[in-house]
Image: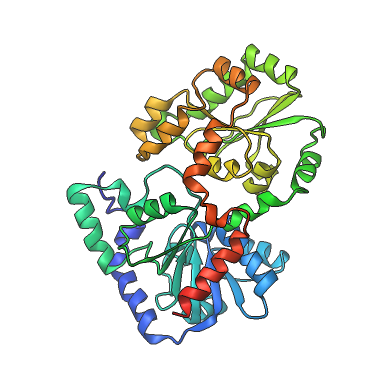
Length: 396
């Protein structure tokens, strides 16, 4: 894979290298001031959000937590939820970034803006989920990897002092993805966003909000994004084939099921009339994917990392891959283990999907948990695990 030198991250690298190291050397840092960010500051979501809320709730007397955002809309959302937040470019936001002792992010340092001022903070990488796609440096090989590693020594958007993982397998993944040396800290903690899966009241709340009868079986379809290389109508055609298939309709009726398709936010909207047993959900109907997962009885997905989260519930996971070959040829590379897990519950036609919904299996679920759920953290509070890992790393 070639390095995209035209991207903002590459073009701004020299200037950010200077700013990052200036921040590291010049500003005094406060170990009890933590800043959080995600999705380049455009959202209040994901692992960073759940850790932010947990630390505020459980450790607010010791730690001042501040959310940094790209716009006032996100700032207002955080404030309404009871948190402290500022935009990157505000006077307060700049001040907080320059003095934070810990900076916690999910995607990259540009979660704190295009010119992040957190160089001297302890940098904690939570990640945007864990899954099977190869990311960051794991996508490169040969000359491109050599160049990428050389560039990372000057400045890296995924520079971190602490990385969280969910298992030994995931720890190895994250070390490979970021070309981390063995000595770099990786803590097996679990993902903060998955603490919400243990909330037993969520199912009733979600069913009520969506107008679903309590006795229904909720089947979730959460596919990943299809890039332009697969065609603008790629996802629409897949959903339409499911919507129109009579065998699947009959199976949903026989099993007293409701099929909810929630598409990736970058996917063009698919407008179809709602049926009693099938609907396409607009992305903002349920704010949190984790809440939706907690309410589901079965998950159908493809290359999305949501399967790793859902498997923690010990409920069936099915991989629906009608365009598997095309997707693999036009998307980021995938770890070999993905195909082994898929083979346990994989289908490519609506009819075969209907059959799997009739004959449930936990084979894929068990295989996912074996790779991604470390026995040492099973049943623990993931947010507290991360908090303790940060405290221990900072106090070394």
